[in-house]
Image (cartoon, rainbow, N blue to C red; front, side, top):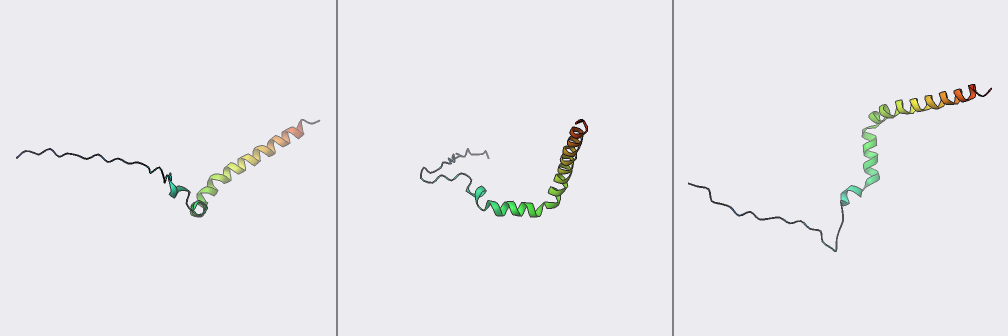
Length: 72
């Protein structure tokens, strides 16, 4: 017994000219989604941002001291 060829149908997707909403779920309830992400991952965010903020403040303080040292 051989296999019989099966005719495949093409599927065409298109947007209606009267209703075009590109990714409506992405912008829906955005503040709630952001709050949820932050409240879930606050430990990781703290561990990421604390060293960056610390290094930045250290560098600013060091540069200010260096400026004042060369003042006289």
